Length: 330
Image 1 (spheres, helix red, strand yellow):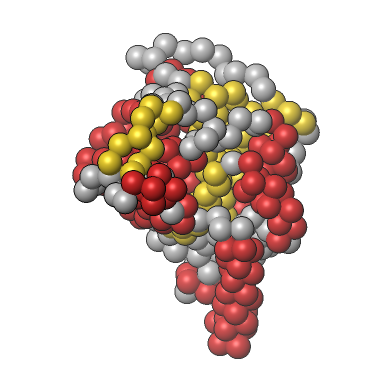
Image 2 (tube, helix red, strand yellow):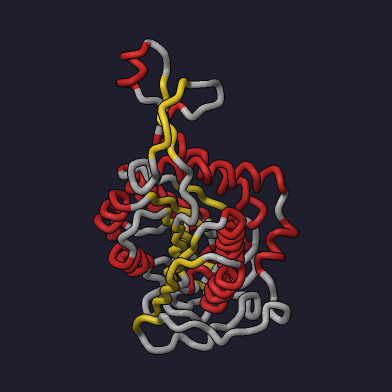
């Protein structure tokens, strides 16, 4: 299933990718630039974030790591009596039954854990969101926030980004310079003249490339991953912790008399066609069915998902996503 979500083209609103290039895998790094001369995405995102929300998201990420890696590399420290404020997920019920009081198992905190950004860079991400913002800009901001949180925690961050013709994979590393390079690489791939989306290919690459259990954050369109990805989603869910951030699409009927084009064709959608109530209702129903089908597939495998329609919704949406993901594990 391919995206046919219409949008008003916004030339220049996203940086040009320099063409789609030859099909295949790209593991090369961009030319190194001085940090002082390059635009700092991490500094920009820090200036925009509200600290209370960031702390909430970062704290939930701590909890996410504990539940992900329990039994997968954490060193056992001690048994201790449960105290108010301890995580109930750490309770050892067998030991609690034998002693008559709640007992928890404590582990040494593991640092430098791996996070993977799996980003859909197809041209449908250059369409418009309901807010009127370009979806690619919202997706980029979501990636910036994740990079900012990972850098602040000292975690390693890896990237798999791609579409129908390109795949970029960057190994997991830490540090500001690595984060900046990774985020700039995503920014350079999001463009209206990019190839069609193929997020299934991106997920397949994550599945084959990452053997270490990681937190995989998928950033894509609201009607993706497509149903054809179901087996890949199932396998990924058994190997990794998986979460999906979907960027919402604007409907073609949202723009009144303004010219509208479909980013996949691209073909103009005439106003008289969009103004007909029966056609507008049919378009809304078709999109709702696609959203429902994708949401049902992700629920089958307990994949937490959040849909954002603007940059303003990203941080709260990510914090909510982490909170629901953590509750689902307990």
